[in-house]
Length: 431
Image (cartoon, rainbow, N blue to C red):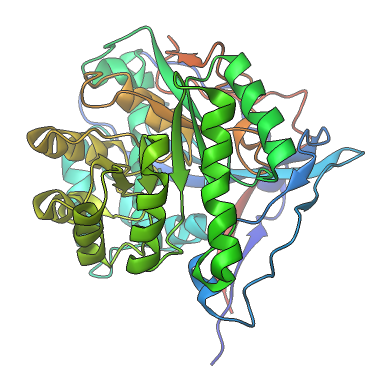
């Protein structure tokens, strides 16, 4: 039987209920019990994007001729009117009125939370974080990929709940702060790499205070010699444009093979990139090991590694110079702090992939700058950056290339009623 997954709005008053403001709860003696795990969808219209052109990045599937697009200028991406927008958040309630709230979360991750983790969590003690993480991990023998992302979302929501319970920011519960604010690098996914437009954007980000910029390859091995030349030229232009005082990182998003990656790395060594990111699919660990032998360019990866065990394999194999495990994907804050401890034994910095800023900011703000020096900020991306947090009152936006550590309990996520046109509790079904 064919199965498909979808979300539906709950009927009646529940669907129309407004999400009340979450406030710190008074300390409660004894155990708490989780009484509800809810998925909230908020909807509205965001302003037009400031992106002028959208450039598709090189992808692993581009190895197929019938899928790989030809070399071409970027297409228009600017909007001239408000754009429909939506986001999903997780809310966990307890019998004592203490709640946790976290997001945005991918819709397909919410399905796993709703169907697999919600029934397991009801009645559990939300303050028993280590036990709950281990039980959620052991509850599913297929705990990789989307399940780990769902586990991460729940774990992060529980950290928010505990922060509200203890009336403290999450980074305080983790032992921070280690600094007043966290430095960001400008992650330029989807932006044009055509020389004139890229130059203007790169200089603008430098002017905004970003001391490091990461740009993405538009072409892979299937684009032949011309694509290779354009990739090298992109790095050359960036270094010439930004000068020697700005760090340059190159993201290849798993789209290369070993020989291509080695030749490309050797060609860009003279431009001193801070790192070359994710040249291969995550399972190809031996290719990472071999590439490090063939180039002086530091190699970064880890956003598609799930759990401390996968990260430890990379570290023990000497496969990477920078580890990029994501708090929203690798198992949540509980797992990321363990990974930081393991990485510190190898002298490898952890610079998490920036899918969701809230958890990442609090972890980095609790770690030594030697372990977690900077964080990723995706600039001007349609589904990230400012737009990803469009519905929030306190969206995390850099000023002078840094994001200040908030002093609100938990993560301090609060929706802005002026931007939310509709908010509903949703649940998933199988058919």
